[in-house]
Image (cartoon, rainbow, N blue to C red; front, side, top):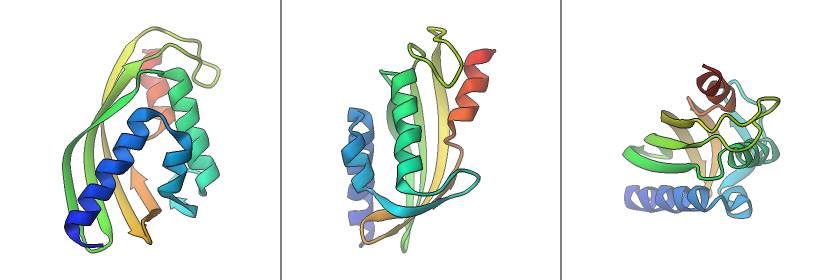
Length: 130
């Protein structure tokens, strides 16, 4: 993909995420995606997103900065929502959370094949337990 196509691709991915459309999100993720420090595979990716959306039904992302180089994207986003549903064993706190997220993605054939970054539901647990 050209640089401008990667930027459009990322915008479409964020739109799917902001709609909480798990089927659309899955279409952006390779079935064998590798995730640093997290379980791999599209099923694990979608399960983590489903858990996030259950806990934060108003969760939204906003792109701050995006850098593209060859088949890689570096994205800085702001994300947030209100903790209204269970997150693992943690009961809803009604606290609003706003976080900076940084991600490095490698894209192949229009799908995320590698991820590393700060997006992690375990980090959210720490923020809302304070």
